Image (cartoon, rainbow, N blue to C red; front, side):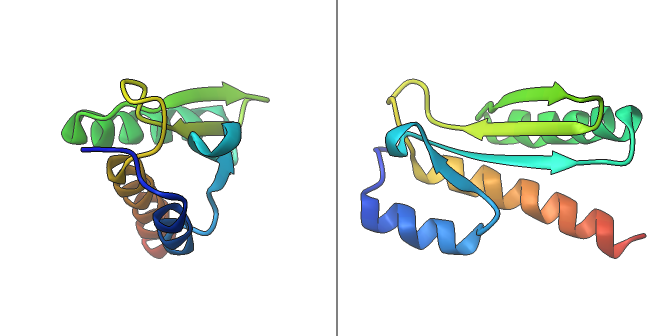
Length: 102
């Protein structure tokens, strides 16, 4: 597994359009907003299940009681890999499925 090129980053970002490139192209980030603190914590727990399953762990920050910021990067390589985009897609699918089941 190696770092992805700028062309690949742009291609992958088209698949996860709610994520933004950060840190000079070394990470992607997305903020999720929930109705309350408990919903935010439940989301974090679901994301942790994805992270464990993929053996790829994002930085997660809960703030303002209902906002969750997720940052993905491959720490060991100092940038973005296909794994970061795979996890971001799984997180997006988690949100999509939750909305579909409401």
